Length: 224
Image (spheres, rainbow, N blue to C red):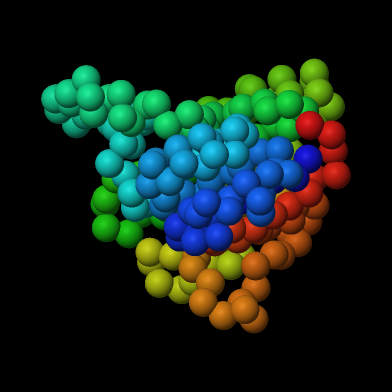
């Protein structure tokens, strides 16, 4: 299965009338956050492939329709706003587990808390997001012989591809998750790459950690 991974930057190679020529052989698209939904809708509509996504810490206008906070219960949204938010064709997998073909994908969106903005979590809160999904992971292990194939996140793990500033520091929770549940890939965004020499892929135990900034293609080697 060939997977187009995207995050953080609207890539002119994708957002163009040549997208089919370049990416028609993709089986799946994974978005690691900080991209507008209309960009995701363009990809879904043009490639006609399933697209799974998580929200990051930017481009959060539609977040209340997918992850309801306490404050969202008291806000009014027009029917048109709701339709626009929910009809992109992309599938939100934030704090969820989704099976696409033979591939098991788990999503954990958001960044480490740095200014109390929306979709930011402390490490303890991210631990809780993971623990909520443990029963489904155990079910997967029993039925499919593995917990998951891909962990799709916005933020990176602590100490892998992250930065020292509070905004771009990674989650420690992802480290124990990889050691315990052994996803084949962890695909993240959040860390912009401006130098071709910047590290994009790192092996951590049995998991290949990949920065999906702009776009990156992986081949799982498994049939879709």
